[in-house]
Length: 303
Image (cartoon, rainbow, N blue to C red; front, side, top):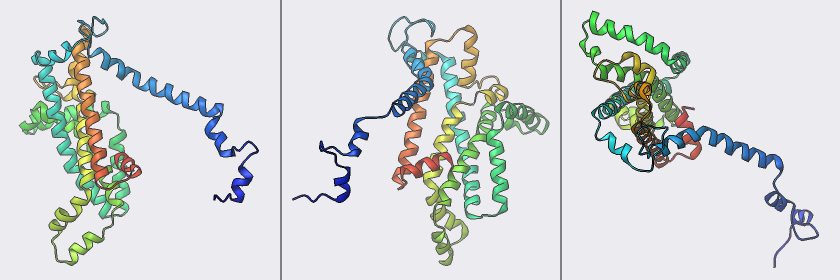
């Protein structure tokens, strides 16, 4: 025998329906309009990406001239040495820049989280300055700097194109990794590290066995994000590259002069898939670490 509460009796109408059911059955025009507007905005943002993915299966000679559906553009990646070299340079650059950014950003994030003080806000301001500085400014500044280090100072390593590209790509990525690691550790209790010190563990042992494992999900997330950011560093790469180390974005810019070909769309599609896989792995790593959806979003944005 069911018992009807006073609230349910008030809400229930003569026909047996309730007030709340109307909200599910009938939606206001404003809700419908907002949903439609949101869909249109998403279509506007993602339509160019969808178009480039579709044209990556074009068998025509030019990207804008559709001839038929096929995988010729993807097979061209394996046949053209120039395309292979550009992709190889981009992948190596992204990996090296991710390693540099992860090493520096992890140490910076741990320092900001575990040694708070007025200096943290100054340091965060510097990282923010690095994040918002236009890439053209970084590119113009890096080119004479590398020339001075490589030629005037005799540091021949900075004459290498891969090194130049990796260092240039790691500037912004280092700030991103620092944000992620700091956001991760700020929400973690420092009692375990204090207990490690009470048990006479050295500073390095505490860092290796306690602090680093606590920050590891953010470190892995930062590495993958830095890798994806390193794949697309067009402006800086165009300035600091040397002959024989042309990355993929610069190769695409040079190919625009003679017309975009389907293999450009094919490689762009492959890089897009790699980026999505990296983001999915980041979310999976954070989820397996016990983070909620809100925590994952906060960590990935450095909040």
